[in-house]
Figure (spheres, rainbow, N blue to C red):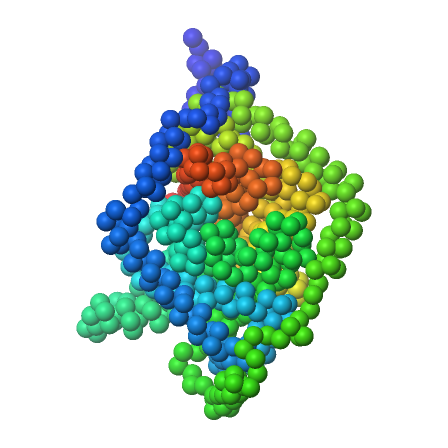
Length: 638
């Protein structure tokens, strides 16, 4: 054979980069067409692994009162958390609305001045005006207990993980499970181990709020300047002294962000915790959902948002303060007057907010929802049907009719191409574990809704993030809207979505997008703003138009932030899988809900929760690997 008939390495190297991926894609398409409908692993509700988990639950339930684990460990945890909640609740109810208003105003003044104090007084008063004073106090007590215990565990563990790479690698999988596992999946075991009520609700909230405390604290400690640490060691400081005098002071502002995010996560759990009889605003929202009345749900959702914004602004104002700056005498005096006035009015005014000062908006809100349902039906139906026909149905058909081994090979190839060998093997392992668990078909259906929701989330997040980064005024306008979208319980906007779109997968996608867009917008905005001003000025002076500056300078340099935004979009969307199961999305979310509500299907629901975690870890590792992998240009010159 002549040398001209054999492609040489130099000739192969001259081919465009897209040739090899295109050839692999053609092979996968051909394999799909040949093997379509074979090895699809259909769902079996009576699978042995489901029944085994259900039997384990029955055994635990039968031996609760004679098992040493319950008698000498779990019961004491429940009693400790319950007594702590009772203490907070007693103090708050004892202060009444005058005392709580005065003390919150005083703390806010010390944290950020009179503006934050005015926000605190107005926010606390809003709980009473909405007619939700008692529920708001219960929620505040529950959140206080959960946040206090979460920080007591999360900050020390985060410091340890920040100082030790081995510890960080060991706890990362545990944090992934805690953050991605659907809340419904561990509500049933928590009710089994800790009964129902405030202690179980606080522990469920802790499971969800501890991971950000650990992750952000570890990040803060790991980013402390090595020069400062070396200087401390060279001066003879012990490890303990270096920790308390170097690491923690320098990481103070980021640790404040960890506290802030822990509070936000705790508040986002108040509704779901009510499903195991946790007290608070969640009860009002669940009551409105059961009666199909948005007018009952919306005030409680607004109260949750007001509480979140109030605590967020106080924490951020405290984080911005100079730790070495002394408080002014006028600030101390004003805070003292507010606290003293609130305490002095306790015996004079009623402790519970008067009914005469409340506003009832139930009928008006219900009428507005009915009007939107009547007048927007044609538009919403067109949007829902178009999305289903063009995206959802073809993608679901592709994933559910392809052989499981072909999907596994495709995930391995994509992950290897995007992120490298190790993330690819982790992704493959997660997918094989899903196949062994017996929930392959439902996982593919869930992946369909997650993929479409993430796509829509990233498009909206990129557009809004770029707009906010380029316009401070637009950023200021959309910030409270993002706060509301992130902290408003999903059940509140779920009912209007049901009225507009019906019980379909699109309703689940709608709810997921609202929940996942805010962190994506914030990360994209921060990434673009972090591009050095000198680089932007150089590109502008070279004659770049605003469009060229965005596409050729800002977006490429914000690549890591955008990849992290994609990662968070995936995680937040997966966190809404169970909520999607409540509104017609089916698949894993419906399995989890069924397992929680029906005793005989507990095993299927628990396994579906594990499969959701595996799906999240698979997608998470791919995006994280892409974030760590250097760009082709960088690899070429290193």
